[in-house]
Length: 321
Image 1 (cartoon, rainbow, N blue to C red):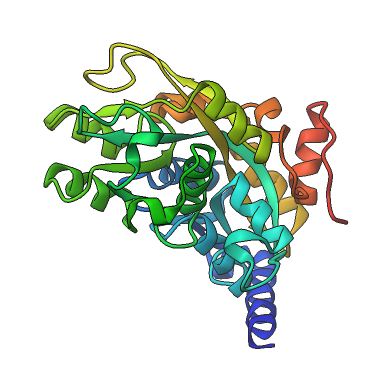
Image 2 (tube, rainbow, N blue to C red):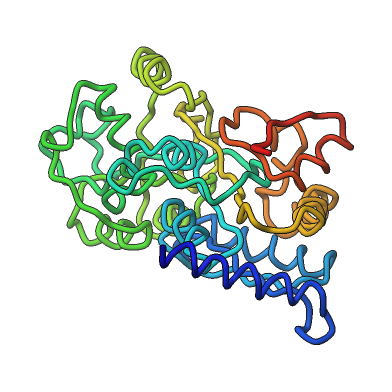
């Protein structure tokens, strides 16, 4: 009840601001991203600026605990939009995995998928060449209940392992990087758009190996979890990486408060996808922005404002209304 009352108050405030833009200085919105060493934070800052430039709404990108926290913060009325992994938003909608205890959360709608989030398994140990080699090793698998955590669990299970077969460490990307450098852990799962700044820094200063997720292992993971897709990390994505690396991916997706006005979300969507070429000059992830990518492989309903934009560009998407 308190959550519902809080969301109602926030919605009223936002509506009043929309009716009196000059008095409120334009609609102010908060965008949840992720840790400062990840792609969400860097790319979110760029997108927030384009939203502000082309809509007049003040959008502030803030560092957060990422996918699950962003969805919950939208539900609480703290944020109006945020980044999330496509698998995590499916968990939220269904009330499964990381949302099994809390139950379904459906206070959000999809604005659009943005880019491929790559499951990257990194190590500085030359004897770790496969996922099976993680048995008995100290491995960072993200915060408990996070998107990274469940990605790591999916990969481990594909290789016939469980969390009990490793020495799990629940660390952020930046903490994982430092722990690898200090020899405190043997490997880490990093799920973010490649190149990821934390991995680039580690590869530059200390050297790092990417462990492939391929062949029968990858096929098994995708047969169990259909929201994954195959992806190849091109050679030279990171310093000292002469060969391409096979792995799996899910999608980084922008979600918004279900209560946001249709015209507002339409304008925010256009601010991103009408300016993909300009955004690409500021962040390489912009090259993956397209109507096709934004609308494919999404199992959760879109916001009506985003659906209107995509319909004008020849693609019909599902809404909840």
